[in-house]
Amino acid sequence: MDSGGANLASLRFAFERLGARAEVTQEGSTIASAERIVLPGVGAAGHAMERLRSAGLVNVLRTLTQPVLGICLGMQLLLERTEEDQTRCLGLLPGAAQRLRRAPDRPVPHMGWNVLRHVKADPLLEGIPDGEYAYFVHSYAMPVTEHTVASSEYGIGLSAVVRRGNFCGTQFHPERSGKTGARLLENFLRLGP
Image 1 (tube, rainbow, N blue to C red):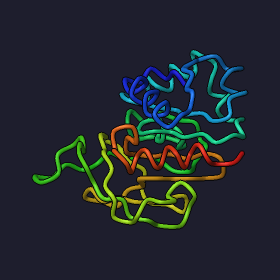
Image 2 (image 1 turned 180 degrees about the vertical axis):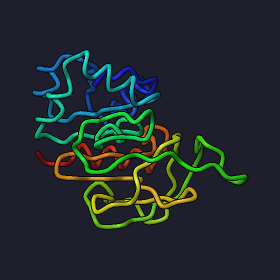
Image 3 (image 1 turned 60 degrees about the horizontal axis):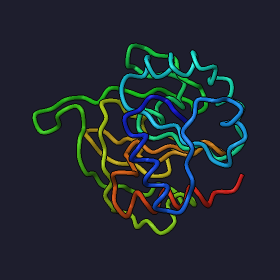
Image 4 (image 1 turned 30 degrees about the horizontal axis):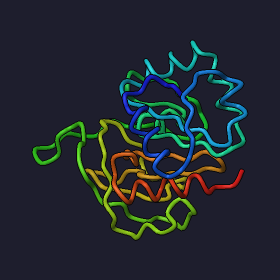
Protein backbone atom coordinates (compact mmCIF):
# COMPACT_ATOMS: atom_id res chain seq x y z
CA MET A 1 0.00 0.00 0.00
CA ASP A 2 1.13 3.49 -0.76
CA SER A 3 0.79 4.85 2.75
CA GLY A 4 3.26 7.66 2.11
CA GLY A 5 6.10 6.00 4.02
CA ALA A 6 9.69 6.74 3.15
CA ASN A 7 10.47 3.01 3.12
CA LEU A 8 8.35 2.16 0.05
CA ALA A 9 11.28 1.86 -2.37
CA SER A 10 13.44 -0.25 -0.05
CA LEU A 11 10.49 -2.56 0.66
CA ARG A 12 9.77 -2.96 -3.03
CA PHE A 13 13.41 -3.87 -3.68
CA ALA A 14 13.39 -6.34 -0.76
CA PHE A 15 10.41 -8.17 -2.26
CA GLU A 16 11.90 -8.09 -5.76
CA ARG A 17 15.09 -9.71 -4.40
CA LEU A 18 12.81 -12.55 -3.22
CA GLY A 19 11.30 -12.87 -6.70
CA ALA A 20 7.99 -11.21 -5.83
CA ARG A 21 6.42 -8.47 -7.91
CA ALA A 22 5.40 -5.57 -5.69
CA GLU A 23 2.91 -2.97 -6.89
CA VAL A 24 2.60 0.27 -4.93
CA THR A 25 -0.93 1.68 -4.95
CA GLN A 26 -3.66 3.52 -3.07
CA GLU A 27 -6.37 2.02 -5.29
CA GLY A 28 -8.84 0.19 -3.03
CA SER A 29 -9.94 -2.38 -5.63
CA THR A 30 -6.32 -3.27 -6.45
CA ILE A 31 -5.53 -3.68 -2.76
CA ALA A 32 -8.66 -5.77 -2.11
CA SER A 33 -7.76 -8.17 -4.94
CA ALA A 34 -4.03 -8.51 -4.14
CA GLU A 35 -2.64 -11.84 -2.88
CA ARG A 36 -0.76 -10.11 -0.05
CA ILE A 37 -0.82 -6.58 1.32
CA VAL A 38 1.97 -4.69 3.06
CA LEU A 39 1.12 -1.60 5.10
CA PRO A 40 4.43 0.20 5.58
CA GLY A 41 4.74 3.27 7.72
CA VAL A 42 7.21 5.92 8.70
CA GLY A 43 6.21 9.12 10.46
CA ALA A 44 3.27 10.21 12.60
CA ALA A 45 0.24 7.99 13.25
CA GLY A 46 -2.32 10.79 12.95
CA HIS A 47 -1.04 11.82 9.55
CA ALA A 48 -0.90 8.19 8.37
CA MET A 49 -4.49 7.52 9.49
CA GLU A 50 -5.65 10.70 7.75
CA ARG A 51 -3.99 9.52 4.51
CA LEU A 52 -5.79 6.17 4.81
CA ARG A 53 -9.14 7.89 5.48
CA SER A 54 -8.67 10.36 2.63
CA ALA A 55 -7.88 7.53 0.22
CA GLY A 56 -10.96 5.57 1.38
CA LEU A 57 -8.78 2.68 2.58
CA VAL A 58 -9.84 2.25 6.22
CA ASN A 59 -12.84 0.05 5.42
CA VAL A 60 -10.88 -1.75 2.68
CA LEU A 61 -8.21 -2.70 5.23
CA ARG A 62 -10.75 -3.80 7.82
CA THR A 63 -12.38 -6.26 5.41
CA LEU A 64 -9.25 -7.94 3.99
CA THR A 65 -9.02 -11.71 4.35
CA GLN A 66 -5.64 -12.26 2.65
CA PRO A 67 -2.34 -11.92 4.57
CA VAL A 68 -1.59 -8.33 5.60
CA LEU A 69 1.77 -7.22 7.02
CA GLY A 70 2.08 -3.91 8.87
CA ILE A 71 5.65 -2.67 9.21
CA CYS A 72 6.82 -0.28 11.96
CA LEU A 73 4.14 2.44 12.09
CA GLY A 74 2.07 0.18 9.81
CA MET A 75 2.01 -2.41 12.61
CA GLN A 76 0.93 0.22 15.13
CA LEU A 77 -1.88 1.31 12.79
CA LEU A 78 -3.35 -2.20 13.10
CA LEU A 79 -4.05 -1.47 16.79
CA GLU A 80 -7.11 0.23 18.27
CA ARG A 81 -5.16 3.36 19.10
CA THR A 82 -1.78 4.88 19.88
CA GLU A 83 -0.66 7.29 22.60
CA GLU A 84 0.80 9.41 19.80
CA ASP A 85 -1.66 12.32 19.75
CA GLN A 86 -4.27 9.83 21.08
CA THR A 87 -4.84 8.66 17.50
CA ARG A 88 -7.58 6.13 16.81
CA CYS A 89 -6.23 3.45 14.50
CA LEU A 90 -7.71 0.56 12.49
CA GLY A 91 -8.80 -1.61 15.43
CA LEU A 92 -7.65 -4.89 13.88
CA LEU A 93 -5.59 -5.79 16.96
CA PRO A 94 -6.64 -4.94 20.51
CA GLY A 95 -4.62 -2.46 22.52
CA ALA A 96 -2.60 0.69 22.10
CA ALA A 97 0.93 1.62 21.11
CA GLN A 98 2.69 3.28 24.03
CA ARG A 99 5.47 5.87 23.97
CA LEU A 100 8.87 4.42 24.82
CA ARG A 101 10.33 5.88 28.00
CA ARG A 102 13.63 7.72 27.65
CA ALA A 103 16.51 6.88 30.00
CA PRO A 104 20.21 7.86 30.04
CA ASP A 105 21.12 4.60 28.31
CA ARG A 106 17.94 4.44 26.17
CA PRO A 107 17.39 7.38 23.83
CA VAL A 108 14.04 7.76 22.09
CA PRO A 109 13.55 7.07 19.26
CA HIS A 110 14.94 3.57 19.62
CA MET A 111 17.24 3.29 16.62
CA GLY A 112 19.41 0.28 15.98
CA TRP A 113 19.75 -3.46 16.19
CA ASN A 114 17.94 -5.39 18.88
CA VAL A 115 17.38 -9.05 19.76
CA LEU A 116 14.23 -10.95 18.78
CA ARG A 117 12.89 -13.43 21.34
CA HIS A 118 10.40 -16.06 20.24
CA VAL A 119 7.20 -15.97 22.28
CA LYS A 120 5.33 -18.67 20.35
CA ALA A 121 5.75 -20.73 17.22
CA ASP A 122 4.44 -19.15 14.04
CA PRO A 123 5.14 -19.61 10.32
CA LEU A 124 6.43 -16.01 10.22
CA LEU A 125 9.41 -17.09 12.34
CA GLU A 126 10.24 -20.29 10.45
CA GLY A 127 14.01 -20.48 9.93
CA ILE A 128 14.69 -17.48 12.21
CA PRO A 129 16.50 -18.66 15.36
CA ASP A 130 15.63 -17.17 18.73
CA GLY A 131 18.11 -14.40 19.53
CA GLU A 132 18.53 -13.08 15.98
CA TYR A 133 18.87 -9.32 15.51
CA ALA A 134 16.57 -6.94 13.65
CA TYR A 135 16.76 -3.21 12.92
CA PHE A 136 14.34 -0.90 14.76
CA VAL A 137 13.50 2.81 14.37
CA HIS A 138 10.51 3.85 16.52
CA SER A 139 9.28 5.95 19.44
CA TYR A 140 6.07 3.98 20.17
CA ALA A 141 5.57 0.27 20.66
CA MET A 142 2.89 -2.32 21.31
CA PRO A 143 3.25 -4.12 24.66
CA VAL A 144 3.57 -7.90 24.68
CA THR A 145 0.07 -9.45 24.35
CA GLU A 146 -1.49 -12.78 23.41
CA HIS A 147 -0.94 -11.78 19.76
CA THR A 148 2.84 -11.36 20.20
CA VAL A 149 4.87 -13.90 18.21
CA ALA A 150 8.31 -12.41 18.99
CA SER A 151 9.32 -9.77 21.50
CA SER A 152 12.21 -7.44 22.11
CA GLU A 153 13.36 -5.31 25.05
CA TYR A 154 13.93 -1.58 25.19
CA GLY A 155 13.37 -0.61 28.79
CA ILE A 156 10.15 -2.62 28.60
CA GLY A 157 9.15 -5.75 26.77
CA LEU A 158 7.62 -4.87 23.41
CA SER A 159 6.00 -6.75 20.55
CA ALA A 160 8.50 -7.19 17.72
CA VAL A 161 6.29 -9.51 15.61
CA VAL A 162 2.53 -9.91 16.03
CA ARG A 163 -0.18 -11.96 14.36
CA ARG A 164 -3.94 -12.21 14.68
CA GLY A 165 -5.45 -14.30 11.93
CA ASN A 166 -4.43 -12.83 8.58
CA PHE A 167 -3.12 -9.59 10.16
CA CYS A 168 0.62 -9.61 10.94
CA GLY A 169 3.06 -6.92 11.96
CA THR A 170 6.70 -6.21 12.64
CA GLN A 171 7.85 -3.30 14.77
CA PHE A 172 11.28 -3.58 13.15
CA HIS A 173 12.09 -2.91 9.51
CA PRO A 174 12.56 -6.27 7.76
CA GLU A 175 13.80 -4.51 4.63
CA ARG A 176 16.73 -3.17 6.73
CA SER A 177 17.31 -6.30 8.83
CA GLY A 178 19.58 -8.37 6.60
CA LYS A 179 19.01 -12.13 6.37
CA THR A 180 16.60 -12.13 9.32
CA GLY A 181 14.33 -9.58 7.68
CA ALA A 182 14.56 -11.25 4.28
CA ARG A 183 13.54 -14.57 5.83
CA LEU A 184 10.55 -12.99 7.57
CA LEU A 185 9.40 -11.42 4.28
CA GLU A 186 9.89 -14.76 2.53
CA ASN A 187 7.80 -16.45 5.25
CA PHE A 188 5.10 -13.80 4.81
CA LEU A 189 4.98 -14.56 1.08
CA ARG A 190 4.37 -18.23 1.92
CA LEU A 191 1.41 -17.58 4.25
CA GLY A 192 -1.84 -19.03 3.02
CA PRO A 193 -5.06 -17.03 2.78
